Length: 141
Length: 60
Image (cartoon, rainbow over all chains, first blue to last red):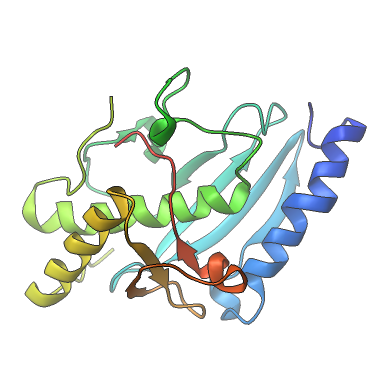
């Protein structure tokens, strides 16, 4: 299901993804709102997160295969190399094919704002790892 | 970027919150204005769930 080029995808965009982004942005300081743009067949969400004292520029891409394939999120602000960080500062968040509910992206239950919240939690872990050298959460199987 | 670390108390609170969230019994709260960590709760009403992290599936 292409989010931008199929009727089912467009319906999801208009009835699920856009409303949840509007709700997320409602009442939020302007610089922390999600800004949405289209890059080819990809929907790009740009936003800032500040779990502690540091502000991070973040980008989440909803590829044409979204929501079957989970969103890709990367941090644009420079980071130290750390666990759960892939090439291009892309966050390692969801394990494809996992049978474990806690590590699996469920397109029927989750929206793009789950990706924002997952990035927030990842960054909170990063802030702790930066100081202690220890990732505060255990890795799921 | 100049990294500004958490102080000892903030660090302890955040670790406890993250582990409670991962165990499935604590909801992480984000400040609705600027997303700063705003503590934890047992649960949140539906209208506030957009500012809360209940159970985000992640592999770590």
